[in-house]
Image 1: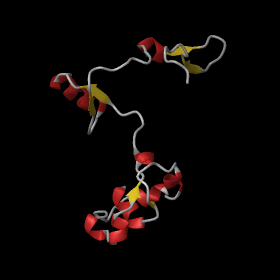
Image 2 (image 1 turned 90 degrees about the vertical axis):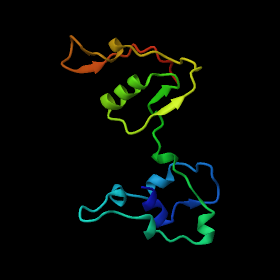
Image 3 (image 1 turned 135 degrees about the vertical axis):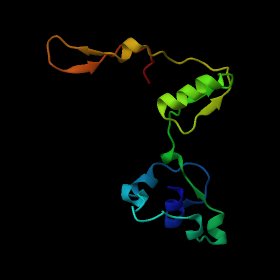
Image 4 (image 1 turned 90 degrees about the horizontal axis):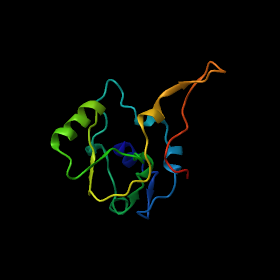
Amino acid sequence: HLLVLLQSKVDFQNTPFPCGPGILNRHNFSDFVKPASSKGKSIDDIHLTDEELGLYLDLAPFLNPSPYIVPEDMSLAKVYNLFRQLGLRHIFVVPRPSRVVGLITRKDLLLEEDGNTATTELQSTSSLPER
């Protein structure tokens, strides 16, 4: 993705601060698909001027706003199990002191059949605060 953005040069900006979701509106999904008969782009294919090297790219639209995290003192065995069970490639490690802002239980996620209709929906009894 980064190589595509660097090669197109249309998303360069003068400020390091996010500028909104516009970057996603300027590209199609197909821009980021590697042709089956190709190895894809290489950093050697990208040619930037000295002026372009001083510019920024806003990558915020490509970031996961809710990444998986683990506390810094979690055992390596538990971290390993998370990687295996969730198919992760990376995980953020954060300091232990943190504040709980809500609670989701297994019951909150159970599907419940509504006796009056044939539809199935998630319960809306979550303890998360509304925003």
